Length: 98
Image (cartoon, rainbow, N blue to C red; front, side, top):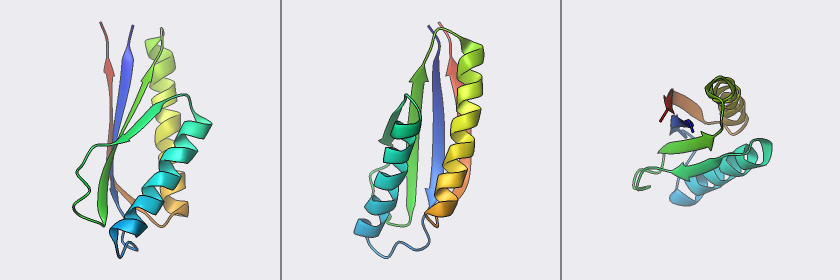
């Protein structure tokens, strides 16, 4: 069964503290979980308050479905980041097949 992984690297220029960083990331993770059936986690240690890395994972029986879903998630991440005054530095997807 294929698994899709999307890694998002964010910059949060308006974050002046770890509290600001957590607020943006929590909002983004909640919106993604609500809009898609997926798992979202922070992949970095959270030491730097104006940067973050998110990992997004989804599983399906269809590779083509996962490819389309990762594209839709990537578009949603860019839209959400824009609304939260965050900037996407990099995003890359990978499909892990059996």
